[in-house]
Length: 425
Image 1 (cartoon, rainbow, N blue to C red):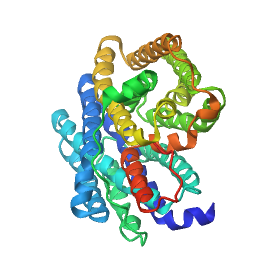
Image 2 (tube, rainbow, N blue to C red):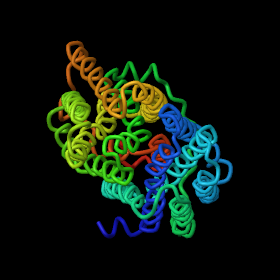
Image 3 (cartoon, helix red, strand yellow):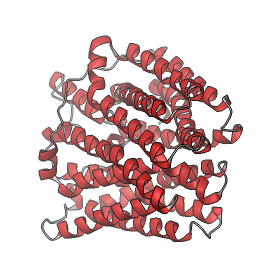
Image 4 (spheres, one colour):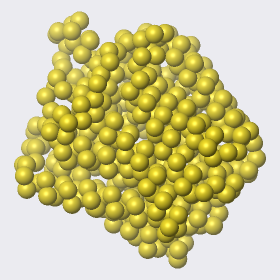
């Protein structure tokens, strides 16, 4: 393991610093918006704008890479992304914040493309699982740690915005100074939603549902936690609990999906997430914050892995030549859900109160369960021995660059036909 990680150690250090800053921003901004008495619908719009920018970065960021290369793009996106937290602290306007969130989403999508394609370039078929498993653990750990930085200072002060800016800036140093070879620049990939729906309706709609539920959670979870507990400082603990729950459950659910079937685990995960979400709605006003935080961890444990399970389920039914189209299409479906989810959830929260966030998520998960069960009568589940490895799906499902990683792998295969074909999606 040490031998596999040594060539990418600098990149992983950069990821750790970058996502610590991102984790802090993700909780700080909704909390500060609540303190500034921004309307809940405005906070939801800001969350939607982030995912709008993120989706645009996924779809269009490759053009930047082709023009000036990975190192220059990373330096430029880091500089821009690090300036945005400072601007948030200087300009307190919900419409301007929405624009800032869209820019941040675009920057981070492109940054993920650069980092992950670089990791993929430095890995082989033998150690790719180790590298991306480590990357996944780091991603979830530092996002949780970044949210805990909210406890350092009063969110009404400028201090935390400056900390987020400094962290994002520092992340450029190990990446830009790394002596790893720059990745192969990818070709353009056009998502084909109709094609991936024909390949796997349940997997496609699973990604859409996950975007709706998780996108609204990332945008409005701190607002729910602050409203449920009456303390803004406890929002960091709630968000951290949910992320830790998701991190712990990723591999057990993946193993079970390899053993017993994707669709069965998709249904079980969505149903359990819906049940936990319903419990949060019923108990939020009367339970202790510890109880709500533990329920949040349980919700994250079953809601967050749904995307990777849906990706794996779809690729189980796809030909290897279709992985690029499948990856780009599923990412777009997630992005569409993550754009619409905060709008819909914030409107419901305005009507019902903070618990409306989980009322919305529960409804989405129950709809997915209903569809998946109905779909099971029309199509047999894929046998376990025909599954792609869940570890490959997990590596593909985390962020923005699975489209480009697979494209790079195809380029390598064209250059060296002896290499075994990758199953990464």
